[in-house]
Length: 365
Ligand code: NAD
Ligand code: IPM
Ligand code: MN
Image 1 (cartoon, protein in one colour):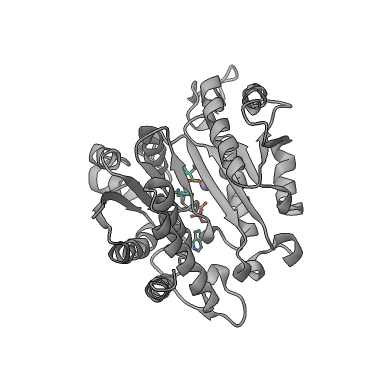
Image 2: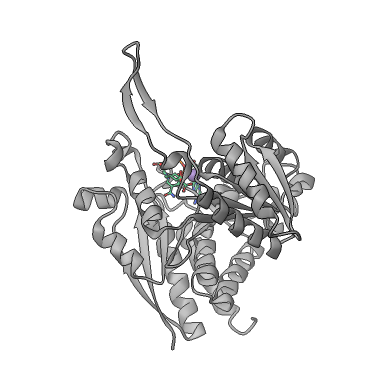
């Protein structure tokens, strides 16, 4: 039977709670599908800082590189918020993305029929939304140099960062986005700030250049401020969105709320080769950590993306997706997606109900 090594990085806050649910689901799926998972749990983020003094230990990065796919919970927390830059949990996450060279971050935002009422938008605005944010993940202002702290001519302390994109970085993310749009509804919207930023001017020029390879995809451009507004005005106008690292970070959190909760949104981060990194788009949610309140569905759906994009196990991925829908159909809701008349459950119980759905769907699929 097929055997895969999956590195699990629970991380901090609600990370371990949601990863535990996903691990159980993957374990059950494996027995049903006749595949084998070798799980390797490694420390990452604040947990790694406390254990080893660094947010991404070498052993964790090499285990990740040596595996078939990586599933991350979340990192970060109050305890480490005032750490120096190189000792922040978030720095470990950036090092992991850079180390795995996963430049393409796919963040789908789909409004499930069961959750239309959980959206803060009106039913007619939210219903049927199905969009994909393709976020550039290993460049832009997150990584650009020069960066740092210093002093200006008035003796004032300054902090500075550089938004920088090279042609090859834009071209490769644009190709991923055009390919993605081609498999969806054939519409791509490139979001930038080309009216102000040089990095965005080059971005727009290159995206237009690459568009020639994809005559079947309808390309449009939008400034990021307008895009933020259009996402809540009429999100159904979007199919695939391609954008830089920081705009993608912000717009995907915004898009998540259309679907009802940030606790619903998964992601896949892919490179040219090597293992992909799969993680919910939310953070460690320190405000609810340790209280069994986290919504594990974003992580379960990230595990489904791992199966589909990371391992090519489409059927196993569909089992998770179907089980999530079935659990919602049966009325189970964590607090973030709760609406009147539904069954309010915690993270663990939600996970158990999804396992039951996976089990009951064995013959149904
Ligand atoms: P966050 O996403 O952790 O939380 C924002 C809000 O959403 C909170 O009210 C939280 O309770 C809620 N929320 C998030 N995930 C949820 C879930 N699964 N179920 C129910 N509610 C959920 O963002 P934040 O508060 O800005 O950041 C907290 C920490 O997480 C920071 O240290 C930040 O750097 C880190 N962070 C990490 C990642 C990551 O690991 N990929 C992503 C974003 C933020
Ligand atoms: C995310 C997070 C990260 C990001 C942080 C924690 C580094 O917000 O995965 O969306 O900004 O990319
Ligand atoms: Mn984010």
